[in-house]
Length: 472
Image (cartoon, rainbow, N blue to C red):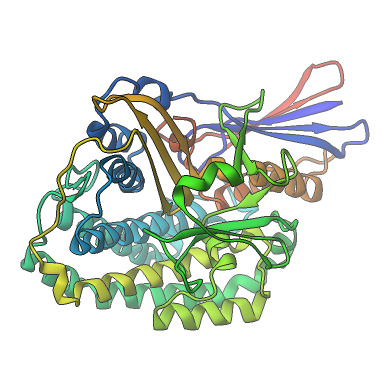
């Protein structure tokens, strides 16, 4: 038995490694995906006032702090037993769409496009965003501009790009400035043009990756995501829907407090990342996928015209249930278009300037659950408090955690198809890393670390001797 270790996996957020065990003939026998960091936010938040939780949990991540802010304030709304003003809900959704746009742009243009533009087997020294800038400068500029638009929209709304304090239990702490509304609206046409050009480009090249599509985690699983009462895509609000691998509805509209009836949580000795599973099926068979791929599989439509047109073409090309995890990339681009269209609709609604944006209350319930769709998938914050409002218990189920079992299965499939232990090539290992990048994992969020996840693969023989090491 020989072992290859990829440590760390590159171009992802957080730290992870992959262990690949080869048999005596050089074939992949088994693989393990490890999340190697522990953050502990659930535990060290105990004792803090509940209203501090949004600011505390936003510090879990610098990439998607808005997601944690929003899931947290929704849990706090439940503890206060308040219905926030309608304009506050609109502003929260607007902020969230801005984050989805910038986060998806980061994932597609900066983290994953080097593989698709420069080649999975290209020189690893150039297979990065710098190589993309050199070889495809216009596409690289588009990615920078789209992410900048999303970040500037966040800054305009919340006064800070990272870890803003604008979103609070009960709503938001200030109404929208009309000048900010006009500035974001003025930038939307260019942002939409970039998004449409990019998805047009991707649709033109996606068929070049047939082998990857067929082997990048295409085993059937369940899917989950938030929908509205009519089955339409939702990012900020709605009920959680579960579909099976054939696209049949299993749970049509789960309310936030009921999540534990359907989502169980397991721990795994090789990882600090929890392994949620669909409780009625059990562990480890209750695998489901969340994020862009999961959302577009459970939703019946997006609800905005340009996104709905792309949604229809996407399913026409790849079926009612799109199974390959390679298509996280395609779904991500559709969601960018949806996010931009929702931003435009919200900003053009006169109610967006209403000055009633916050409800005030104290502790009226000893427990609260908040669920939203982070860019990477379903995010759950669940808090319990005492009568004084101090946190006595907290549980976070993060998007990458929801995808943990699916990522492990995808890594196994890619490794078994592409890796030949008798003639190791760097491109083989890059594809193993690339399937992880397709999920756009945020391991800082999931384990409760910042920085690039490096990748090292170690080849070890049957007696444990190190034969070779490859680093990205």
